[in-house]
Length: 98
Image (tube, rainbow, N blue to C red; front, side, top):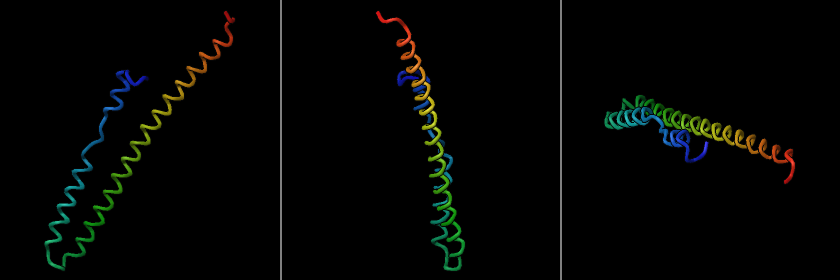
């Protein structure tokens, strides 16, 4: 797969989902609302804060997993290219020199 091929272009143009970003914004808004509430609601605020931290870590983990998948695909393509080049080299060495 070369950089000009349609498969490579589709591979590079793929974008991650915005679903996680929406959830983060919703939790941030909830945190702002609880910050305006009286002191008795601090326990709920801590829970929301932990949810936000958890979701941010989850999102970071998902992006790392996605990047890992991309790198694995690239590595597979490089292995295939390496095998093809090695095969060509062997054919040239076996053919009679002219």
